[in-house]
Amino acid sequence: MPACNRPTSPSEFMPDDFFRRYSNEEIFGNDHPLEIDMGCGDGSFLLDMAEHYPERNFLGVERLLGRIRGVCKGIQERGLTNVKVLRLESQYTLEYLLQPSSVSRLHLLCPDPWPKARHHKNRLVQQEFLQILQQSLTPDGEFLFKTDHPGYFEWVCEEMELYAKFNQLPWPAAAEEGGFYYPKTDFQRHWEKQGKEIFQLRYGQ
Image (cartoon, rainbow, N blue to C red; front, side):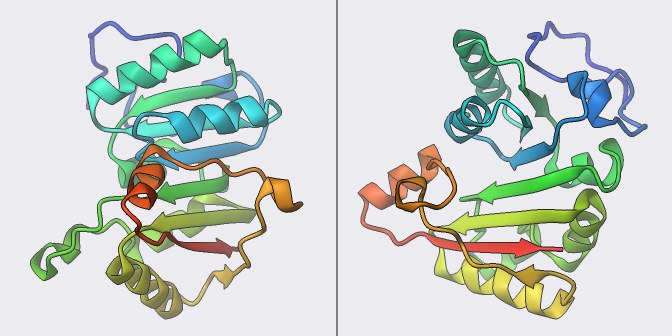
């Protein structure tokens, strides 16, 4: 997969070689803990997290070019230096581009639930993905998942139970209640306005 020649923003991570692995230091110029936002959408969650945790690095992974450009614009407007965005497929990013044991937290928030049974094979959380995820996380790394879709929530619970190599952790209270800071994504706000319940899961190594 050759490097693309299209113009890029300084806030976009554009690998010069898609067939080798990159370290956190190569991407950000430091070895701060790395968090990944898979399918970062409009970037609202990603940018809020980066602003709140300046001591951490954040990489948003997104396939749609329009969203990539929008997130880059937001990064520049906020003057953030600890966040970049990557236009690439999610599983490929973990499996082939990032170094093993390099991700401290991976966020998969309100992904496409692929609700029809014939499309379930397209859901990201499968046994193969969980193996790749485990190899990508640091020894104390975490996987955080949210969805508005009850069927996908049950699917992830079953896949995690079958894989049996992660420990389920409690979801801490919100920051205003003494827990950790965790802003809502644009999709979560959208579904909550429609009265939908948001299901959440948190797992550790």
